[in-house]
Amino acid sequence: MEKDFRITTAKQYEDTMIAIFEMQEQEEPLTAKELADIEIMLQAAQRYEDEEL
Image (tube, rainbow, N blue to C red; front, top):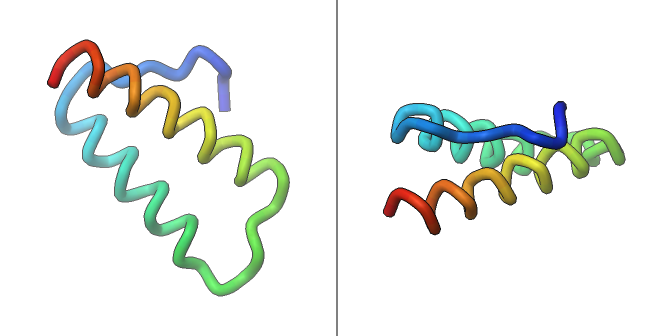
C-alpha cells in the first residue's frame, strides 16, 4: 500500500475501517506487510477524522 494513502469521502472512510476490522479478525496471524498496511490505513483514517469530522 502506498504511504500517501488518502481518504477523501465518508464511504472510503467506512470501507477502510471495515477492511481494517476484517484483517484483524482473520484467523491467521497478520504478516508484517499486513500490519504495515493497517498502520497506513489507520493514519489515513485519523487524518480524515481530524480534517473532515
